[in-house]
Length: 422
Length: 105
Image 1 (spheres, rainbow over the protein chains, first blue to last red):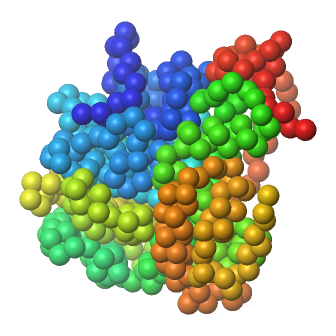
Image 2: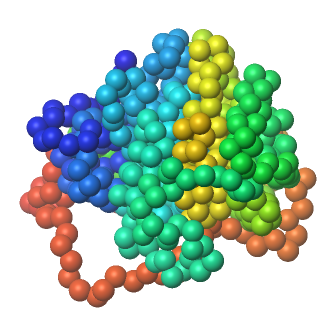
């Protein structure tokens, strides 16, 4: 089913862990789903991997993904496209599609580590019917994560249950992060960073906001399913109110401008020297670098490098990069206003169920980018979010997205766990 | 090398010369088929990006990092690092303990 690029033989006993292939694993090939990194064997573990191992996890494989995280459907993969375990003609979602597909398909319990820049944990979790937890930007160390867009990249758990995700998050949370800086959030400190303490609790009295703009972007069947989920939360004692996030429609272009700008600079280092794809060193550096890069990068990586380079060029920087950075401030302020009124925001994770590969083939790049409309704003703002299984449409899973303010992972875990148990 | 200067007013007039110039800057050799494909994608995607024009951002400060963590300095002491052989372990292009690369002059 092409969930794994590299399988690891289990020699040690422990909790099986599948790791997305853009997270460095000592002695195990790490490609970021790209031919340009074929054969790269890191000499160190990413901090999150090191911490997961310390907690008793054992790596069983490195999972397929869209090249460098560039995709919504895990179809831009250099090492095989993962098929959705619920329907092989459909996508697993991207870009952590291999991890989510593997966790969903596994009959025994398995933990996964994915990464997100614009929704790459939530999207495949939603399409595969598993749990995806994306923590606050900076809460989990990015050391050892092959970067896509450094101001947004995050590592987070993909698991079968909310409690498992809470457990894994507790283990991989960076110790070096300064809690003193987080002056107005005591919530996450409760329980000494053991997020499983938020499981098994009541959500009575919690205020939950439903953004009308997000509901309007969802397809009718997804919207109907979400309304049922919201009613369930009300039955559990939550107070539900409609909210508005007015910068939703401009979040998507602003996000893509920033993400592509950062990606084009981050990918400049891949040039056929030191590691990854290489050939006989000959000709000028321009010729050699261009030859390797043209051979090693796939179509979507080239497209994003080109667009990212373009929007940073003299004459365009103000119009695109700086403008998008200012819109980012407005998007964050929009969320902050809402979090004065509610504890958690609830929305559909994705506007649709997992599409068929035949449908994806007909989509233009911009159509694919637009599918990210619901996961992008929260990633752009660096807020924590959790996707949980909310039921099925035509035998395919639908995700319920829970979003909280910075460092309040506890709240989304509390609501997600209560919803899952009900 | 032909350098094509691009002015913002040409924004919606993306031509293949622009794509070719950007590709040169990004160190990518594109086939003619790729240039034509990316030219079309550029038009579609940049048109969508232009939605931002309608947003008033006067007096709004740009955000480059969502949370200000401050600078956390590590202690000023020698720390364990990877060895020379580990650093060179992922390439065939090496000589006398150094990476071998293409000519720069």
